[in-house]
Amino acid sequence: MAEKGVGIVKNLLTKATESGNDPYLALVSYRSSPLACGYSPDELLMGRKLRNRIPRLSDHINVVVVLLMQNFKITLVAIIIKVLRSLNP
Image (cartoon, rainbow, N blue to C red; front, top):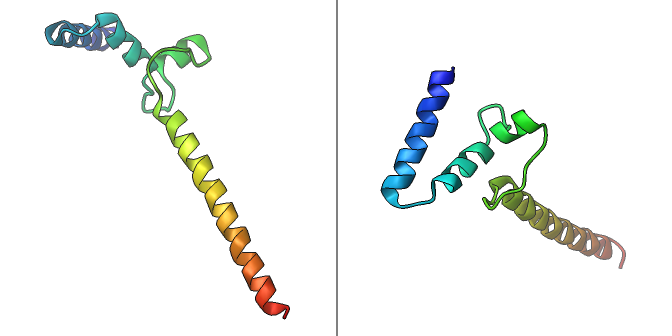
């Protein structure tokens, strides 16, 4: 288990230095990326979500879903009003 973790970090640092990127940013992005269980290594270690510069996909998805739901509710209300008006002359 520990050998796999060392290999992952070594690979991250190697790729970051070869591409000229910041190795610390590569580590931050790895630690904040969710695993198969849905939690990031940061969350498993600290028990909470940590703040960082890396945007999370779930944050963007939540915003899009909320906007779509609001649009759906407005559309649904408009349809119901039209149907009710057509029933009552």
